[in-house]
Length: 50
Image 1 (cartoon, rainbow, N blue to C red):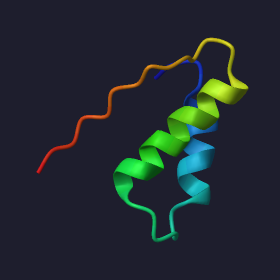
Image 2 (tube, helix red, strand yellow):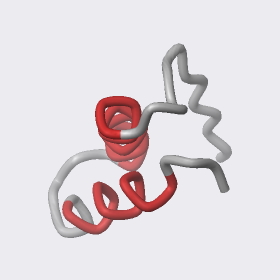
Image 3 (cartoon, rainbow, N blue to C red):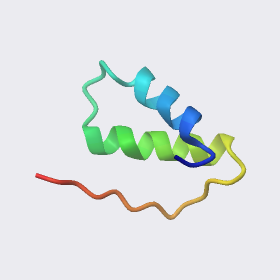
């Protein structure tokens, strides 16, 4: 857990019932955390498992 986890969790919660893919939800959460938390910055790496 990093400094932006609460913002990221809020973003994930807000997109829970949307048709957006899991990967896109993760990216949106990271972008929200970067926008609202001083210690979070891109670039981000999203790793998917099958």
